[in-house]
Length: 91
Image 1 (cartoon, rainbow, N blue to C red):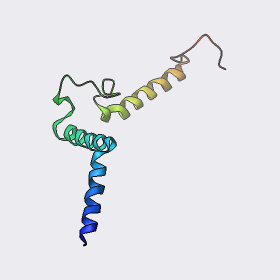
Image 2: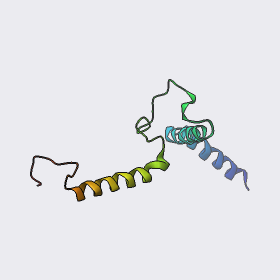
Image 3: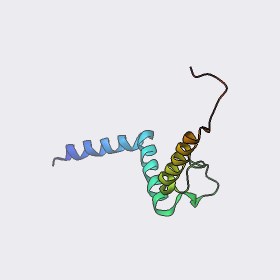
């Protein structure tokens, strides 16, 4: 490879390293890897991620909970007393 190509590659690398978007992308990747390895709560002063405070702690049990709710709703329908009656007519 010629010396001119090496110089051109070095200039291109420095131009990429000067971009703030490059540093943000690398920071996000680093944060994601760090969170995977060490867990999310490594810094208690860091604000919560969107949806983190309301996330279901047991996502594996959601299908069972849905089936239980569905069966209860069907039983209530057969008994003639649905659970969510509103005074307003449907639109």
